Amino acid sequence: MSNIPYDYDDDEEIDGYVKIDRYNPELIQNISTHYTDILKQLGEDPEREGLVKTPERVAKALLYLTHGYDLNPQEILESAKFKEDYSQMVVVKDIEVYSMCEHHMLPFFGKAHIAYIPNGHVVGLSKIPRVVDAFARRLQVQERLTNQIRDCIHETLQPIGVAVVIECRHLCMCMRGVQKQNSVTTTSAFTGEFIKEKTRAEFLQLISSKLS
Image (cartoon, rainbow, N blue to C red; front, side, top):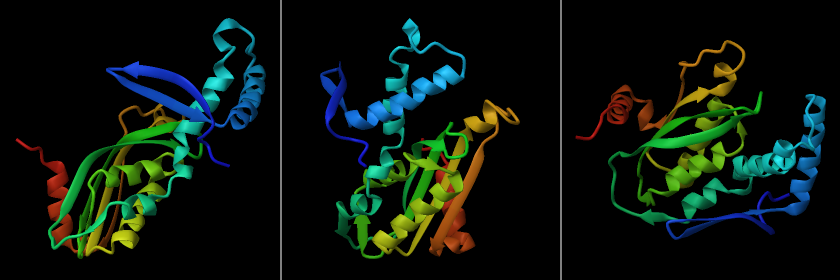
């Protein structure tokens, strides 16, 4: 069932831009009912002023945080795939990542760094962050997320190689369990030319450097 359409909520105008969130009312109601029960199980009063609309807010937040299930990453790339005679590395780094750990349903967030070497086709640069979002906005583990992004770019563009590095902080480690607030998890995945040490080293140098 789609997370998106039907109802309009939280219309907000900022600098002339109106943000409109759309939700399926039936889905919101079903999820809200469960969260009302969860509040009761926690010993809270769902009827008190601060919590009256909390189940609905949480339902809408969850649907937004997992809206990647309604996106097709391959179609995103195909929509801006162009023939181009360019065969050097294309790097998009510092892409913001926001996702939800599937084990505890707590957020993890950080940055993704992605590169590919074209093989006759390039893709609109904005589509790469969109692919990241399409996979990240689901219940995830960072390792799978890294591989899914790599595989999607590799299978859709058929490049000479793909490189993906993701660095994230996980609230399931910071807020509970070992409670290590400064720990960062790094995952990587490579195909083709990036499996070679020289090419991979160039990529890692590029994502580590700062433009002057």
